[in-house]
Amino acid sequence: MSDVSEVVSTILRGRVVTPHDVLDDAVVVVEGSMIVWVGAPHDVPAGWGAQVPEPTGSTLLPGLVDLHDHGGGGASFPDATDEAAVRTAADEHLRHGTTSLVASLVTAPRDILLARTALLADAADAGVIAAIHLEGPFLSGARCGAQNPDDMLVGDAHLVRDVAAAARGHLATMTIAPEVEGVADGDDDVLAALVAAGAVPSIGHTDASAEQVDAAVDRGFDLLATHDAARSGRLTATHLFNGMRPIHHRDPGPIAACLAAAGRGELVVELVADGTHLADGTVRAVFDLLSAGSIALVTDAMAAAGMDDGDYRLGPMAVRVAGGVARIVEPDGSAGAIAGGVAHLLDVVRHVVGAGVPIVDAVRSAATTPAEVLGRHDLGALVAGRRADVVVVSSDLAPQRVMRAGAWVA
Image (tube, rainbow, N blue to C red; front, side):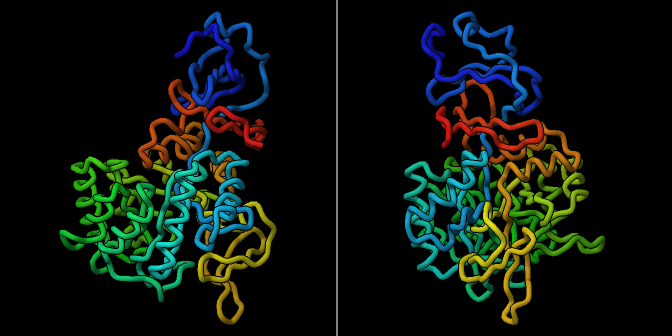
């Protein structure tokens, strides 16, 4: 900590949500790009005490961290061909409190995946996005959701290495279906190649049996534990429940296996808890079963986030948003599978809290836990020593101001 007699960039006061508690009236002191002190107003060190503002009706949250986001503001990461489109999508979410965003691609031909990954790596170098996620191409055609099954491939470790090279250290996660040939069935498979590249394998878009998921998680967990480049010691599950074989009491499938693995501390489950992808009762049940340290709230947002109803693209797929729900446009013009979300991550937090989940758990799942998945222990919490990413919200969790790295976002 610097000398408290120095000029402090910003002193904030309000109800402060930490990873473990809610401080009804607290102060967050920011110097430069860092949080340097958090605590009760009467405990503020003397050098700062004269600058403490009066009590406010605002709530202070940590900057949110979205592990799964395909776009927003009318721009799509899978369709971006220049930096401006990437920045448009990232800025849409930044203005609404997502201070660290992982840009997600969808299944596409090899040359497109490599080109989009390289473009996103430039954006990550520039600090526009936090990392890159590939949702495919080693997925189950039977659980393709809003993705093009014609572009899905058997496991190819060489392609993983080429994507990782294009990502230049920014490949954070890749969604894989463990039952697909070459994904989790040999020494030089996709699972091993991902861990070697410093990326976290994510189980999703899968028709696997529980036994196949168990085997993949066990092997992936062991690989992550022994690899120095691992961001996280745990795998993830891509938007649990969505794009997966449903649970049946005689065929538990991937959902039950992922929940069990999360309970053992081997996996983090993503939830798209936006009121469209999952019922509120399902969300509450997962929070009752697991700690918030094993749940990452995500948006799975696409270009329509923050936009009006209308027609959009998600990679090669035409998407129509009607009534705030995005769906694939089938060849006959009818509405098909849900095609990602249109919410910001703060909207998801608000929905989860409204569904009955304590705000501490909701915020931890939208900030602290996803930061841990990225291996970013400088993000995701209002504690001293972390980057000064702060979201100031009203009593109903509507955004008022956003700070990223100590600077207010326009």
